[in-house]
Length: 432
Image 1 (cartoon, rainbow, N blue to C red):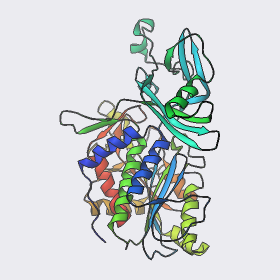
Image 2 (image 1 turned 90 degrees about the vertical axis):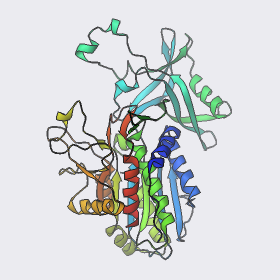
Image 3 (image 1 turned 60 degrees about the vertical axis):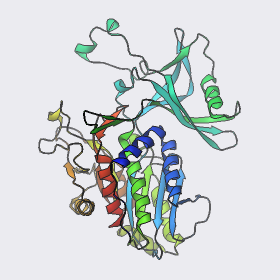
Image 4 (image 1 turned 180 degrees about the vertical axis):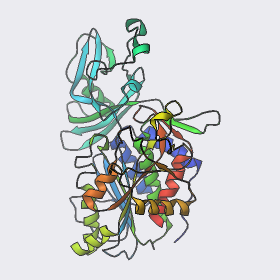
């Protein structure tokens, strides 16, 4: 097996390109699929019969993708090594009747998705992107990546107490963006505009999954450009790293002792309970079908799953310089100090001692430092796809990620080195 490539600053440059090109989960998986195709992977359709030949394959379903590489001679009971991530981020999503407005302003009706920092969406130039469903059953991606929308904040002159008492936002009344002027608000105007933008004949769009995004591009930040600011790092940073690691693993050689997998799910930010979420059947179905396509039985499936390990990679909290007391006093993850290993004894994260050993071995192999993260006992702990994956499939799972600031903001912040440190650790995990 040849030595896999070592990722460096060029990986972070490429992450910036990926973030900018992926304003929605649908764009993210399309971009990941394009990268996999260039590496020799081929799409398989769920309604078709699958064969068990060696090579790279992937399944697309909505905003989720599952990809794997079967080495030559892989037995039906060969275990999997999985990098898990999610493609969705908290944002504002367009309602079924989007055309709205009042007082001479034309607005777009939006619903709050996940748990965004609402104030981070105020007074920001916003685009609109997503998936259009057409009358013939096909879909079309659309991306208006220019200043189109804005959620205007109330001037301080009309809310004199805002700086003393804090900003209080009503999700229904205060978060509806403006996109033009006019008293005559007509149903269908927004969709007609998007049909024209996407080159779709008028009246052909019968459904849509649309969301707002900041059009400000990712950028290096700081005196020495040692920081990276950008949108949707939670969790496209992990999707990008996982895609890079899988293609590197596939290129490394055919004698891998297991089958490397990337599983990037949608809907993590609202509970993962969907046909494209981690709590749905997608991952288990794909893994089982790959076992059976190689001539395996249920016994082979059980053996493969018993030997499988998943790294659930999601962003975590770096210690905040202005709020250090919110963190556990003995666990202060720092940016650019390597990926974090997430631990919670109440199983909000799936990591246990044996999982820590797996991750430590991968980091040692890659020459990558890592840190431990645990929440302050006085603060509720978040969760990830990790515990869901472990419980639903009986797969040993370890929660990891990259430490960032401003999580769930429209624009987040990480260290410029951490993305490629994570990618190197993931590659070592898939290859070890």
